[in-house]
Image (tube, rainbow, N blue to C red; front, side):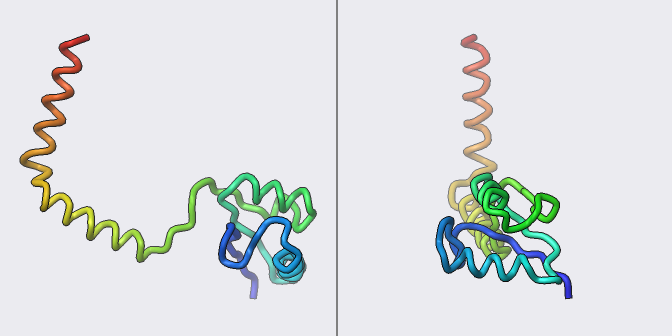
Length: 106
């Protein structure tokens, strides 16, 4: 079955590490290997420089790989912060007032 995977520092991969390089060679040599997703320029360059796979099989997506659970947890905390600090009734009006003051001073 064809597969795609994300490669990032951590999770067992390290640049210039014999063990992770060996594993990467095995995985990228598989007939089922379709693509590798990388989120950091240095990892993209490392794959190319060391001939782990052709450019066509590397998908560079700048950013970070974040588990869905983290987003759900952040959303929960975000709602709690809004409740605790009365965001809509106190913070937003303060931001508007500061914005007006800055605009008027220029």
